[in-house]
Length: 248
Length: 223
Image 1 (cartoon, rainbow over the protein chains, first blue to last red):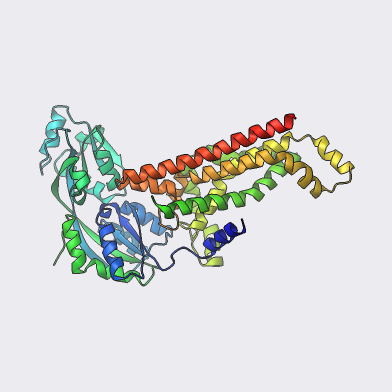
Image 2: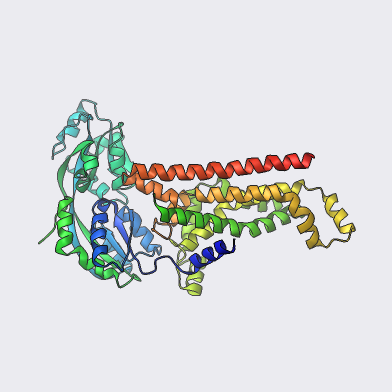
């Protein structure tokens, strides 16, 4: 009992892993970041990286409410600008890669995938469109991009009754794999994952999102090591492998 | 299996129990032994977290733990730490969130003790404190155990509030229930399954303890 109390006391007084780098990362980086973090920790064994994934808008709101992150990796420059204007970031903005949107349909959904979304139009016309998944355009960059894409092809109004709104890009993927959905707009990098490729097909669309990283005000200075690493040749190889675009 | 998340969850649940034991005893004893205007309102406020959607509670907590707010600001100037998105903030939230689960069972068992028993103890020369520790506390024991077990399992299963004010930070605010949600989104269904089974097992064991204990107690009382 006394030991337990001591353990409890110690764990309150000493914040766990004080020297860690805390990353707030957009969900579209969910499958690429573990590999990057692994490489980073091999280079700097003394630093441990903890990652929290959520939609960029959600993370921005958390940072503005005082969430103790060191680095923010946003799927869109919009949120970095918002944090910059309200004085929540410091240092340079790192443009580490560019990401693309994909239209995905699970095996057997019968939707024909084309860049101009004609398959969706056909399904709408012959009443065979079930649910169409997008991330929430209010706080998820991929949702905003999906909305733009649908507007561009004049489908936004027609798909309204079919829309299934996910909380983030990763939830959009999860919804897209359910039997009730016809198709979904998800990050292109997801489509390349083995476990996802097995269950459906995706087509890369033209919309591009600039991915940006930045240090949060009050963040640990060791966090800059991670920002530098994001632009290293080693990181670029990993990003390319996962379907992102990098500038050389 | 995310062991770190399990550790955070257990730590949070134990700390919440440890805090709610004295708070719950104090509140339930006062409520059971006194009559005052506004007692109904008092009890309603304590029970409120039971019926409020976690998002409502989460929103109010988020706003009040913010460093620009009174409570959050005071905490920052006292300790230099931020309350929102910290383990301490989560702990504070859990105390509020689990308050009815601690107070209600204790209150019921204090109310069941006949006032004559207390008066007899006083007549026999026992002080108020002695009466409490020797007579009332042992009689209220089943209620107190129930309160602690319910607080523990309820805190362990907290999700909505943690999602609103926790921010899913590993080693700080990522509890087991959040880790389950996260691994479903990351397509790690085996992980999610294992963690869900762990929570299920803990919940089943703790609730069984309450039922077994209460039955034995009732049996003893009858003798």
